[in-house]
Figure 1 (cartoon, rainbow, N blue to C red):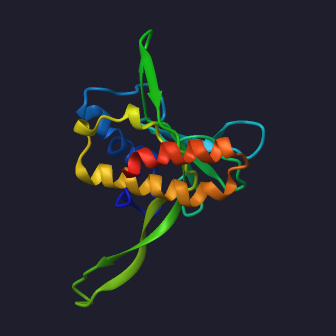
Figure 2: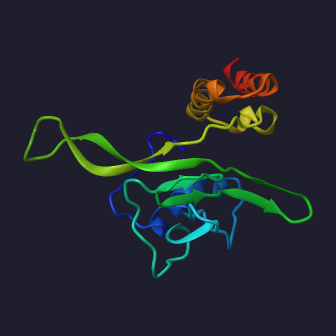
Length: 187
């Protein structure tokens, strides 16, 4: 998720769904009938009601709050979670879906106001922070379709993959795989 993707406190998921989908729409794709995100339980179930990012306005939809988690994957965690699942599905051809886990955190951004002509930091915006770090396959990304800031964001993400995961790899094969997949982005 782009580090500058901020949203207001207590926003509903349907209000930010189109912001997330816009990149697929620009390429002529969509994932109709599939939620961009949903709550994930820490129990036996996968989907937890309430928290949702979807183009549909759901009656019991909770507002996004600090501590909720958006995932583009699975996560075992005891906090309320959210899963973001943007993907393209072409029946009988292929499908691709990104899955990462994010926690909703407070973002203080500088704001100028008429009442305070100096720079003031206020707690009124939220952002998504990545919780899981799994390298993306380099051969699946076409550089020509990426902007420079997007490529920089992917390089930064893969640098953090190395920093965060390497110490947790239990086998030499695991460490070698992580280094190979992450280094492909850092060259």
